[in-house]
Length: 543
Image (cartoon, rainbow, N blue to C red; front, top):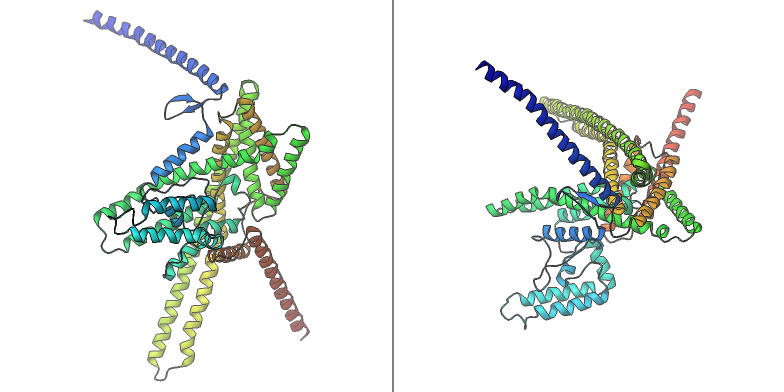
């Protein structure tokens, strides 16, 4: 028994290490083989598909079609219908309109020409004419709705008004107010992001606010229905569950649009046939960057966009041009370091916003308690007197007004911290979006490798010029401290949003000019107040 156990132990001591060595050697050999495969596939311009677990050729146009198909599937249950009852179609390149019901009735895109609208009308009219649908009691109403839609869209003026304002069929003041509030317009004016939208898409804060507002309105509308069934309630919960998938698809669509916009932007460089053409491309980018820098927050946009574009291009070119991909690894290290800095800024901004918010809430609560205590004392004094004193009646209201102003002031003081947090989130979001957009542009197998390399060179030029001009304008310091300036921009943003909702023509340059005028007026008022205070002080000293 002893010798048997001894032999078994010795055999195990020898066999287990040998087995481990063999398995390790196999894994090393497998890793070497996979590394060689990865290097060859990468040099050939292929991409690793984590879902399929294989190397594939990526096509930008193909992904666009795939996203459009997924979007149609996602909206299957809520998409519009044509007058004949068929599903309406749409694509990601459509222009945005306030309401698209009339377009859906005709089965046309919002970009449809007058000829396309007319052709679609006759096509749908033949399908839903009451004579063609004798068994449909609603055929006449459908045909009438189709005619009304065509009447609106066939006229340039009425179509333009419909695109801006939608159908004037709501008599609810709350509904009208909600429809007039467009977060996408508000934040575009607030941050002056209209010039950089082709590069970064719609700002994260704008799309998030827009989605939250729409979801809240839809849920409120559903909850107001007293006769809601269990199935309808389940549909609402299902809509909440599917919102994450919809957000992911929206982000993917945004990245594709940015990739297409970048491809269009660098087209002059791609088609350049001489050094003069390349120089003209660089000059055009510099002019565009200068125009962006003139807007509010423009320099910060330039630094964020410029660094992201330049580093992504350097990483791609570095892995393909330098020995052993040294340049690519260096660019990736630089990018990771920058991302870490942005994460620290985001963390710090979050802590600061939470701290300032809690402090403001405590001060507001203190102000409210003071109001209640003063009201209670005033009521007790009035009760103890036989004759009411008009002055006593006025004191609580005066105090209420004073405390309300104090509460509003304290809440306004939190705006810079909250806005700085929003900026930190936006910076990280822009970097991520441009990273994926550049990857799509550089790995697009729709063009050969030399063309992809040239794309990366053009993007590097755009990024370098944006980054240089942004730094010169102080774009690396995006601390937001001036609450009065923020309030001015917010007021103009609200006015612009309401004006556009009412059909008035207010372009982005007009909004920026209104902000500049408001700033100048504020500066003049402050200067007059300072001079008045100085004059009063001198008179007192003389007296």
